[in-house]
Length: 379
Image (cartoon, rainbow, N blue to C red; front, side, top):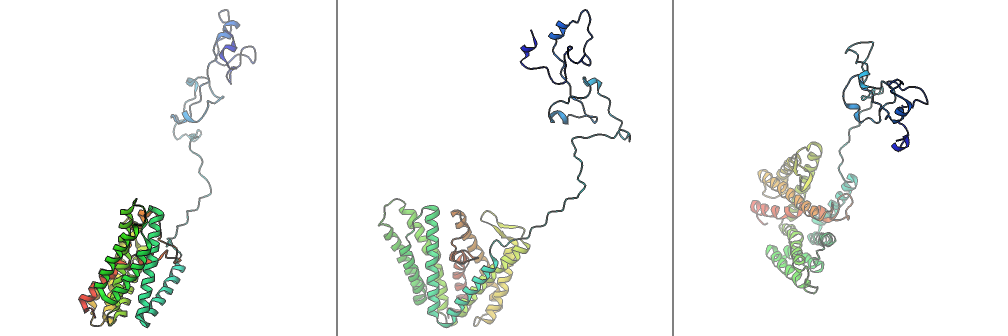
């Protein structure tokens, strides 16, 4: 057998007897060890060095070294621990950097929205609402109807885009506007009749299209009719009282103060999640802020805005508003999470869509209307 039968040249670190002399540790030539036998002898593999400190960490550090003793037994013993003339070597541990690394700068909390735009839009909407509320009641009823129609358009559009649900918008928009007017003119009885007629119109309107998906479309339509215009009708019914504008103003102030308290306290002190699966941004501390702010504002509003109202009634009213506004916000978040969206629309910069502002107002309206009727009558 010759050298070519191994399929590769001799390994690095080995030289045959005819090239650079004897190999360290090889047997001397003699009568029993001739050149023919040397050619038949497989070269001794090089054993890598063992680090002075011992251990198995070098097993995965690459190929064996070409320098050092041939056999492991020839490795010099490790220096005694603490010998200053032989400091221990640890190739696995890199030398620490002489220049200290600066600590990362702490990140500031972000509101998640354009706060300036949100404040500007909020002030503008507030001015329009207050002006229409105290000048002509009928104008404010028109503002409610417009908000209802836009909210229905946003809701039905998102349902069709994300779920393929085609709730008929035309009967919803017409019936929703009629529902608000009927509530203002005829009270609760008129609101219920308009609600029933709107639901019937949704059922009939959807019959003009193929039957596939009929059940889910009309179910979504009836839900939209109840969720947006019917709940908004209670605002119009509040307006019918003699001090109607002040009742509506109290309702709006308490809802806005509740949301503001939840945002301010939750953003600054919030640590414990309130409903992480529904709305990860809401905290228990924020709920405490909503309740505290709303109860304080309720006591002031009932004492100074509502005729025959007292401060303790305001505390109850504020607590109820904080609860209903929080539940309404969570309900809207549940809908948006199911649809896979952050906002219902983009009509209001810094806020999202109309429905993103109505989420806490809609379920709060019947609560405030009912408590004011219990405390001071229907007016």
